[in-house]
Length: 245
Figure (cartoon, rainbow, N blue to C red):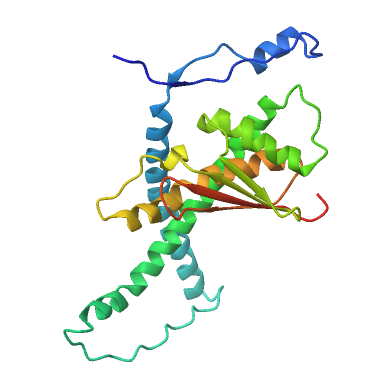
C-alpha cells in the first residue's frame, strides 16, 4: 500500500539563534506525525459539533430573553408582520411552499451564522499560534505586502500543504488570495447537487478565514477576511486592511 501524506512542521533553529537550547526544546518539541486525512475528518466533526452546540446556546439565549421580557426587564419582541393569505394553485404551489418555510429558513440562517462565528474564532487562535511558531526567528514585517506574502507562502504551506495560486491587490489595502484547489473543500460534495455543495462549502471556509485573520493580527495587521466560494474546489479570500497599515 502506498503511504499517505503526513502533516508536520520541521524545526527551524538557526545556529545563530539567541534562544537558549532549553527554551528552544519547548518551542520545538519532537515531531509527531499524523495522517493528513485526520484534519479533514476533524473539520467535519468540528462543524457538526459546533452546529449542535450553537443550536443549544441559541435556544438557551432565547429562553432567557423570553423570561426577562415576561418579567418586564426587557421590552417585548415586536410582533411579526401579518401575512396576506394567498390562494394556492398548481402553478404557484412551489412558491407557496417556499413562502411557508421562510420562517424556518431564517432560523437556520441564524444557526449557521452562529456556527460560522465560532469557527472563525477558533481559526483566529490557530492562525495566531502558527504565526508565532513560524516567525520566531524572523524580523518584524515593515510592509503590508510582505505580511500578505508570508500568509500566501508559509501559512498556506503549513496549513494546507501548498501555496496560494494567485495574489492580487489594488495597492489600497485590499488583497485577493485565490486557491484553485483549496484543500478543506476539495472533496466536498452533496447528494442534492452542486449548488448545495457550494452552499455547504461557505461554512467550511470560515475557519480558514479565521486562520488568515489571526495570522495577520499577530503580525500587527488588523482587518477583515471575507471568503467566497463560487465553484468547487476554488476559494477566494478578500483581505481588507485599514489604510496606512
